[in-house]
Image 1 (spheres, rainbow, N blue to C red):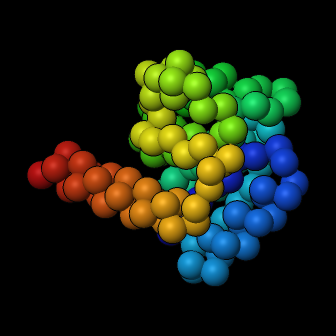
Image 2: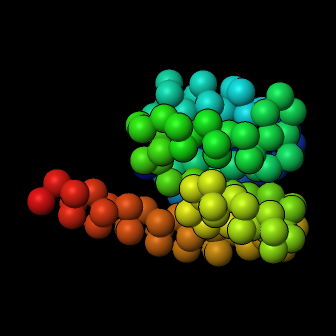
Length: 131
């Protein structure tokens, strides 16, 4: 499995990249929204973790751009942000985010459960589309 972590905070980048790699997940990291969109095309991840507050292009902009690209829109996204207001969650989901984790109240077990759930439902959708 390949995960792209789009996060500008160096501590979070390193911490989550290490934790995901411990689970035998291949990880690439982008430090801002523009780099994230570029790496989505190059790295071709199975799943994206996306922060909302970033330089160059925020997470909402990344979600909008992703929606406009047929191939990128297929990649599941978990928004991973300190923005936890209901409006932020609703906006992110309306722009195509599959799920939302508030990193202020983070639990790695929850993150892994969400990864497994989204990847399982993504595989089921792909099987149904190919039938």
